Length: 402
Image (cartoon, rainbow, N blue to C red; front, side, top):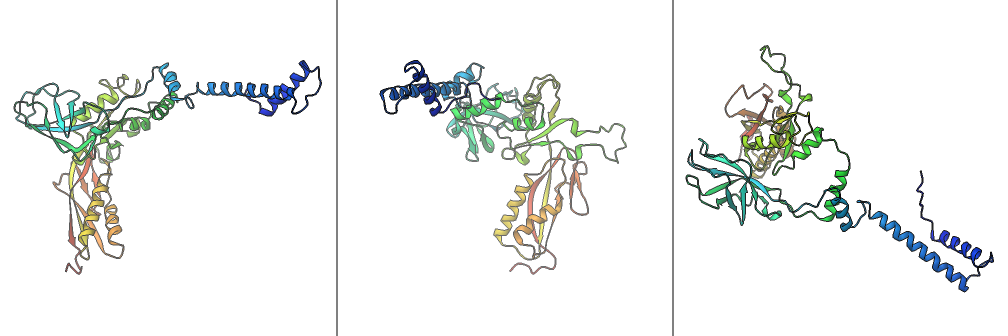
């Protein structure tokens, strides 16, 4: 279907004006080029062309893809959508103190040069462990509230009896601070919002969960958590069909040890995503969609690397850093092949050097997982192998270190 108001070319506009002028004014006589009548027709054609241009521009101003910023804001405001103000940075801090000490409902801390206040529910007393992790948010918005390992400690803005004045920033990470939304960023968000996007899909939900401050990965609860296995003879064994459940692990690799969030953070995430009563549409997901965020359990492991010849300090550091980076990509409940570790070593040492690697549980625990004869690690459901240390030894038969 063609547009009913197709814009003609300037030549067509001129020809139409010329013919109309000849018919109505000159009684059908031709218009001589460069005559007074010729210039009158040319002016009329230019005016008509200007009207077309203005109309086309005004029509574009009703299209959010092309509208200028002022008109874009007016179009969106009619639907109740407005530009976002600056976002405030968030993070997690650890407080130490005497068990049973009374805690205020709101705690304010000073980190670097900025003030942060607790969000969510703060327990009324210090737990028996003598430490607590709370979620804090910057009082002022903007990227200035972010910190990537620069701010590691801070102080309480006001003293609390029985609680240390110094606080620790978990992982030194304060994330999510952003400037106020500019015109083009608002345009993209507005257009995305007008595009239909189903909210019940796992992909949409994972991307949404990653908006949580300092979250780095959202992983499916799969692997050893799916199904019972052939050796499950216990009638109480509950088989899990992972394909029918929206269950995830949310990892904070730069904030918490092993990337595992504490229970309080997992509880906040569950309420935000699925609501207090799952399936009622109280969270991000639609009515009828159930699921949960699961907290992984750390199983500390050591990795021993055997190399035929003595590696240099630089090679050892490179191997260790690559293994640390690799372990941060591991998902809970998923096996680790020792071949993956050996490939990391070979990439640094070269294929000609004889190498091998072994993994050992710091505290052998069959409930957490097991290592087979090939050195592959098989974790049980919800367990995450977490690197304790990497050690280097001389492979038997090697030349040794000078």
